[in-house]
Figure: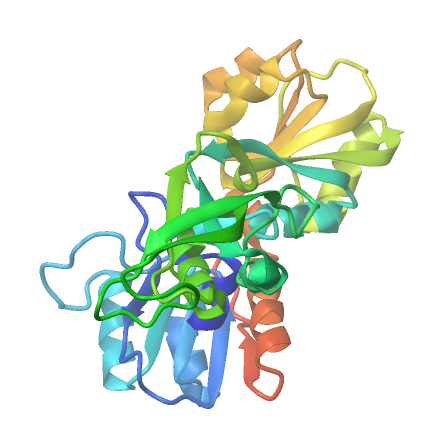
Length: 358
């Protein structure tokens, strides 16, 4: 869970979501983990046969409370089976959707898109840390803050603003001051250090501040910023190196996503170069995508009238919920394997797509 938290913090999930450990003891030791898109009774059986103590699923099996466990619904069957076999269930859903390196990035990579950017970055997630440090310790303190994850702006890291001045303080009787004498007013040459960080790593950054700061009492301020944070948000924008005609665009989607057919809006004959995509149910973004002037939008669960809205504006493609998120299994497995080299991570072979094509 800690490994997944470093890439897609669970605090980033939407209010309606239920990501995190849904079933099981967080302290239990496990030998293997099975990664899937959905947890079904067949997936639980697969986990049992492979001796996996934990199932990591993209979609939560539990969204709402269960009032009874009779086995009539597949979710009840899953819970009953998992409890009997002592298998934990963990969901990593909208938090993985929203991070730059998450579900949409994986889909964009499969389609061969370049110059990737979050389509709708979040606001209000950034914080600014301001602290004051003796000049000779400023470099070490900055390094500690940057190692904790502070100081990232776009593709730049180790970002900070620094100005020298002096601070004053008088140490009380019970103190052990780094500089100055007890009961005497002291003036110390200091550096004012400013840097930013996302709110979900605040505890880590503050701990690093206190660990690397020489003062017994560390003075610091944390401000909420309303700036956009372009590493977290909804949807993704990317470009094809070579523009495609509409037929080439459709053929690429069908080939890469293994789809027998596509639903789309009216053809215009225009070349497709810069597009937006949102894996899963992302049609709620359509109005904003149209306003952005992009050539096409790939998502799923598009409503009837939305195809009308898109006509003449951009090429709208409904490529299926499962199809646009199917590569999430490999994404999650890669995250775990890179962090836990000697740990067994297995990818489910069960096709959980509930939609069939005739």
